[in-house]
Length: 121
Image (cartoon, rainbow, N blue to C red; front, side, top):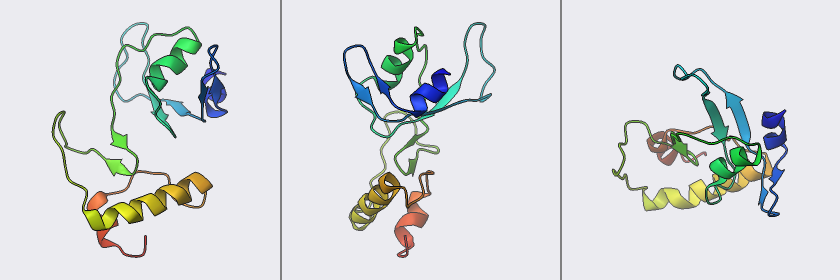
């Protein structure tokens, strides 16, 4: 029920509204007693959105792991490391974002190098 409610979007007690959050239980790693892993896909990423969404249902988030940011897969990028997005690619990424928000584009993370080389995207 909670995961479905997140999928419909949430309005918190303070009237903060979160757009739909896709949340799926996942066996990525063995869960410790009383813990469970959930993969979440956010549309906006408001300040502390994941923690606040779970708090709304009475849960505390003990650990967050980001594996992608927008269409960027983090892959082997370590905490604190950066990778420059080629300037010629930024406009294409923004167009992709608009298509995804409209529902006519892909929402899954893509390989950045391949995306930037493919002029058809």
